[in-house]
Amino acid sequence: MTGRKAIPPKVKQLLRQEVGFGCPVRGCGNPYLEYHHFDPPVNIRPHNDPEGMIALCAQHHKKADGGAYTVEQLHALKKDKANAAHVKGNLDWLRRDLLAVVGGNFYYETPRIIEVDGIEVVSLHRDEDGYLRLSVNMLSLLPQERIIIESNSWERIGNPLDLRSPPQGKELEVMYSNGDCLHLRFIELDSLESAIKRYSTDIFKSLSFPITAVEVNFSVAGTNINLTPTSTTLGGLQMTGSMMSRCGTGVCLRTGTKWLQNSKVQTKSADRVVDVSDNVLRVDFRRS
Ligand SMILES: [Zn+2]
Image (cartoon, rainbow, N blue to C red; front, side, top):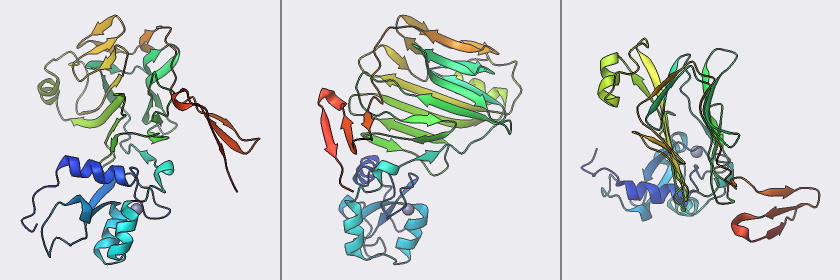
C-alpha cells in the first residue's frame, strides 16, 4: 500500500452504480467487482476520488493494471451500463449439510423454509451430487423486477439502488429504492462454542460441528414482513430464536396480499416489450 486510506463504502457504492453492478468491459458483466485507480494511478498520487476510479472484475482489473486500457477508454467505460441487463452471479459455497439461519430462527433439514401465499420465498433443495442449493424469491408490493436466486445462482436484478457481492461468492446484499432489501451470507461455524457466541443461544446443540450456516435476512417495504438477524416478523407472527429440524415446511403464511414483483409482461410476437412497471404502460418497439 502507498499510504492511501481504505476506499470509503460510499465511493464503492457510487462506482458499482455507475457500471450497473457488472464489470463494464464488453461481454463481461461479472458482478464480483474490485476498484481500480487510474486517473491518476495511486503510485503518482494516492487518492480515493471516484472521478478517477472505476469498478472492474478481478480479471479486467489486472489487465487495467497492466495498461490494457487508456485513460480515455476507462473514463468512457465508467459511464457504461451496457452489461447491466446481463448481470448474474453464483453463490459458490456448496455444502452437503447447512444450518439455515433465516430471520434469526434456525432451520435444519427443512427444505421449504418460508412460504408466503404459495410462493417459496426461501428454500433449500439437494442437487444430484448431494449439495444443498439455496433459492430465494423476493416479494415486493411494486410491479418491478426483484432479484431471483435459483439453486445458488442469481440474475434478473432489476434496478437496485445497490448490489454488493464480494469476490468470495459467499455474500450478497441488494437494496432497492423503495426499501425492499435482501442480505445473505454463508459462514463457517467451527464449533458449538463459536455458534453460541454468534447467535447467543445453544438451541442447535444437537447438531454436529463444524457446520456451515447460511444467514438470510430481508424486508419487504410497505408490509410487516421483516426478517432481521435476531427475529422474524411475518404479518401478525413474530418468532425469535426457535429451531425447526426435519420439517417439510418451516413457516407457511397466507396473507392475501397481491404480490407484484417480476410482473413484466413480454409480448414477443409483436416484436415489442410491454412494461407495466409503476402502473405506467410503456411500449417499446424494438428495432432489429
Ligand atoms: Zn470483467
